[in-house]
Amino acid sequence: MNINKMFSLFFKSKLVSFTIILSFFSTPAIAEVNSGDTAWILTSTALVLFMTLPGLALFYGGLVSSKNIVSVLMEHFALACVVSIIWVVAGYSLAFSAGNDWIGGLSNIFMNSINVDSVSGTIPESLFATFQMTFAIITPALIIGAFVERIKFLAMIIFLSLWVLIVYVPVTHWVWGGGLLSSWGVMDFAGGIVVHATAGTAALVAALTIGKRKGFPKSITPPHSPVLTMIGAAMLWVGWFGFNAGSALGANGNAGMAMLVTHISAATAALVWMFIEWKRFGKPSLIGIVTGMVAGLATVTPASGYIGIPGGLILGFFGGLLCYLAVDFIRGKLQIDDSLDVFAVHGVGGILGSLLVAFLATSTFSGLGLPDGVSAGSQFIIQLKGVLLTVVWTGVFTYLILKFTSLITPLRVEEEEEIEGLDLRSHGEKGYHSD
Image 1 (cartoon, rainbow, N blue to C red):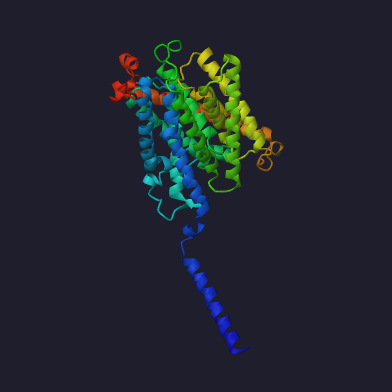
Image 2 (tube, rainbow, N blue to C red):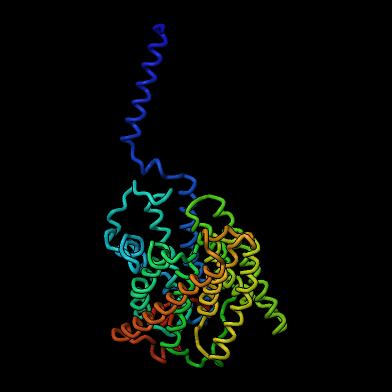
């Protein structure tokens, strides 16, 4: 061996050793973060918050009378702030820290174990926690639609704050935090059970407990601004891409397909709703088409990461049809004043998608397939059990929380305040000025 080869081997061996030493002392957290995934979830997080502020706030705001729009906007904005603090203090830890089948632990209270190097999958844990925070914000915000124009502001804050901790956080742990429903094999990609089944059920219970608006159903003022409602609905549609495609937690093909089927379902359901109204009343309405869109989005949410294009079309069709029939039945036949049809649209849609995913995820409908050894029938039973447990848990504890809240403050505003409007009496502001 000549001298040049000896030096070459020596330096190569030293370089390998130095590389091994560097890799030993380097921070694995930094090496695991994927910049593409991180960029997409940063965007998705902003999109999901955008769904509530201002999307859902404007969607609901346009549906109420002009004397109550400020109250609706205020409820959404204040709730977003309150839930953010609750999530930091204990919500995130109870949902995603190690615990038992029913609830997580308090090892991450005040997010004390999250630092700049903490990683969740391929993204920073701080980002994952924030992304999940936006889900925790919009879920109780959906419930606001059940009791607009008649609930006391303080009662709303107390009720929904407790609801997040007692209902939303445990169900999140069951499904996404390694809890009970996860161990059963329940499929819920982006929140058909966690978000829509819980919010829809709570809305129905709240509407029954708080009671109907004065004059319901004959003398209720129609939506004061279909324009605002359409603007809010468009924000929801765009934001929902972050909601569903963001739940892939990465910039990948799964996110791309989730985005596509989400859009297809929304468009299909909107058209179904529009044509039903057109046939029934002789005119297609703006309120109708945007409500159908929301129904399609809610229906596809639990299935969005498991299905193919045929599944998006099917869920959009049945979501638009069944949610429309549910609105007609609950408001028209049962005379329940779920003011903005939260249960009929979100509850029915989310539950429908959570059940049909058992069939639409199969290769027959171009889905990603079910786990090995699991048939569509057995997966349907798992989905049904998960939905039933969630609905019962939500219904019972929503009622108990409302009753507890009523011991602290009346749930409803005074009759004079309801007649005059909550804007001036509760907040001292008006949404519109004539001069």
